[in-house]
Structure formats: structure tokens, C-alpha cells
Image (tube, rainbow, N blue to C red; front, side):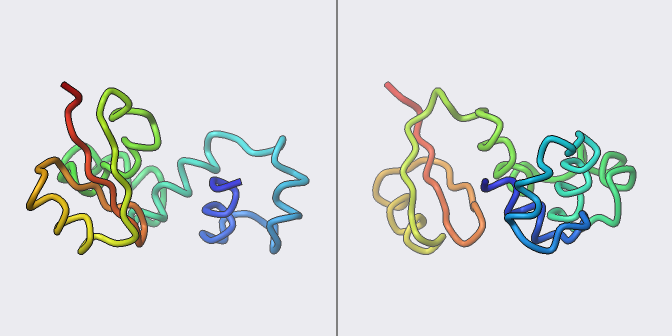
Length: 110
């Protein structure tokens, strides 16, 4: 459901309601999700995004790396906002990843 909500927010499908998109979710293709990612990153299309994405700073794409499981071997501490995460980081260390309005502090497991 979170991916469907994100897809609906980008207005890249004909669906106007989450229930409509959920009902037709079997028709979704990779191209729809790539277009969603491009839109979330501020690009007009996936073609424009893929030409530029490798040159972006890690902080820009870390949210998507988190979704993909890139930090699964690390301890993750979630916060309601980035300011709270940064306060926590000053004491405990770690790496902060912004995730929408929230943030996560990532620590290497020992």
C-alpha cells in the first residue's frame, strides 16, 4: 500500500483514488514505478532521471536504497523528523537518512 500511495501522489496513473489503484495493481508495470521514482526525484521522466542519477549525491537516493534493503545489516533508529535524528546522532553517531518527513539514524552493528 505505501508504494500505491506514492504512485497515486505522483498522478502518473488514471486512478484518482487509492481504492481504484489497488483494484488495478496487477496491471502496474516496472515503467510505472520508474516514472514514480523519477517524479519523486524531480525529473520529468525516467529517461531523464537515468542519465543523471549516478551523479547524484548519496543523500539524494539513500531513501530508495533504504527501501531496497541496502542498510539491512545495520541498526536503524527512526525519528519523527530530521532535527530529532540529528540530536540523537550528536550523542550516538551514525548516518542520517531522510525519509519523507521522517529520518532514520543508521548504525553499524557490532
